[in-house]
Image (cartoon, rainbow, N blue to C red; front, side, top):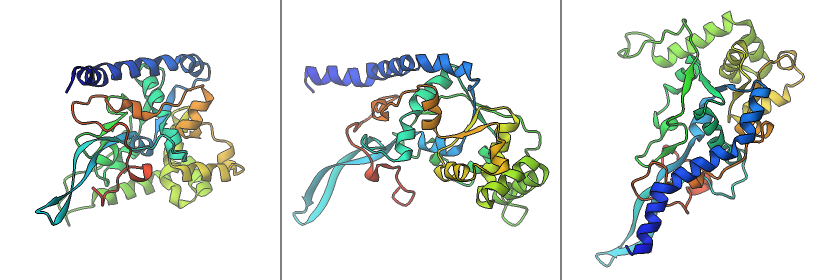
Length: 290
């Protein structure tokens, strides 16, 4: 590597992340002024947001094919950190993801508090851990070092490590707990009737956010957001005291600016980074592909 290449590499890996963090924090100046005025600092954050907070994954960068033994074509290349989203992607998910860096900065600086409930934690158990924290060695989660405050709940009592056939599975315990909550929480049951049984989990989360006086339940489940809007005239929805917002909707209320997550490619990196690439279909890789 020539001198210019060494200087560029040092800048990308050592100095660019600090510069990016400083610029993001600076861009939140107006938001830090507006959020306290609206008492909008307490947020219950959905698992869907954490999942989409994985903005880079470990991908294969191809350098083309060569013939092995003069007959068999072999793809050559290398594993690297690759941004998930194409910067021209205008779908709802990609647009909301661009507001996550500033929301994360607000949480790290204490301007907002991101809350979790036991019910939200329980929902992650049947899924692979990597769905919310990253599968590959080079993956990047914006939420990795973000403080998430757990709401106290004395009724939480899942039992782990049961042998097959010796008791209810974790999935069965989660389902049973959901039924118990809906039967004992009139507000959650009321919201379930408005949104439908398919949204029973979300009805519980919304009721939890409302009961704790949170400003909003932040989600990237756009089917839920559409359901809330379509049922806006329902009495259970009309009297909601907490909001159901995507990161983009929350950001627009407080002049939070979008940031292309591609500029975070070199954060905590000491390995190959393909910052000019993006994953196929501009979305996280499927479990089957992995």
